[in-house]
Length: 149
Image 1 (cartoon, helix red, strand yellow):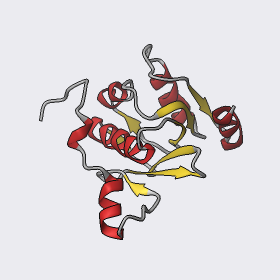
Image 2 (tube, helix red, strand yellow; image 1 turned 135 degrees about the vertical axis):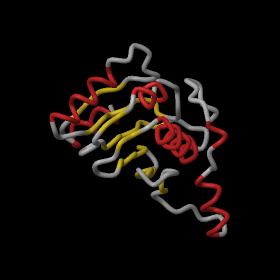
Image 3 (tube, helix red, strand yellow; image 1 turned 120 degrees about the vertical axis):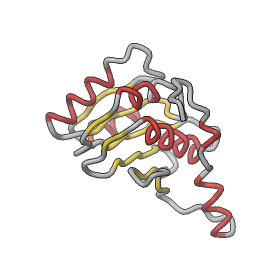
C-alpha cells in the first residue's frame, strides 16, 4: 500500500457499528483503535479521549485508525479532544501529516509529562495547517479547563 497524504478513512471499519452489532445496539466504551495501539472514548458526552498505549510508535496507519475511531465515536458531531500521549515513544513524519486532516475534534489538548512528550508535541504543533486549535499541557486539569472553555 502506498502512503497517501489524504487517506480514505472509509477503508477502516467503523468500530462503533461493529460493537453495536455484537452487543445488540448498545455501544461500549472505550473502543480499541484498529491495531491496538490506543483507545478512544467519549467522556460524559462532552470530550473525546484518545489514550495511546505506553511506549507506542505512532505510524501513519495508526494515525488513520485513530482518526477513524474518533470520527466514529463522534457520530457526525464535533467535540473537544484530549490526547494522552504520555510515554509515547515516537511519531512518524507520515503520522504527523495524517493528523493535519480535519476530524471530529473541535480543539485538541495534547497531554504529556516528559521532555520527550514535549518534543513530540512541539514537533506536531510545528505543522502550519493544524485543523483546529491545538495546545500541549502537562496538567490534565489545565487541559480540561482549556478544552471546556
